[in-house]
Length: 173
Image (cartoon, rainbow, N blue to C red; front, side):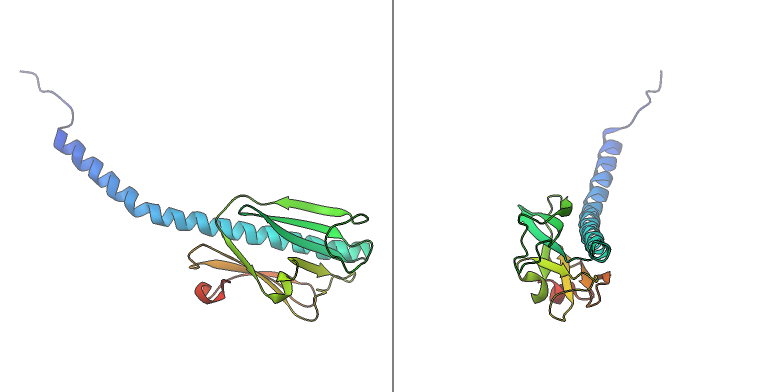
């Protein structure tokens, strides 16, 4: 009699159960990984555009505006000069775009301190300093549960920095 090779039904069921348990354990970790990657990516994108605006303000010796807006859940960021040097910081005739960046659709919560929330604008003067009445500008990126996040800070002299939030539950707006 020939011996039949293969797997028994019980062996296959045990294998399927083990795989299902492993997938169940890995799914929450993968979700956190994806959220953290989105947070880091968006914070880095904003920091890069803020640094570009500061550099361009110094180079061109004129104020630069960084304007944030939402299209659905995507954060769009525009960098443009304030050529006509008026009090209106929205883009208008006479201003020139330096960079326009469209974000990806994600489920991040974006908050900012009072310095930034005024028309969603951060303004650099012609010397590259933050032109926001003497304060620092802080923008936070958090996941929906406010369990993790990063902040992008522009200090009064215009330096841009990124940091993990120590207490996301309290710091996410």
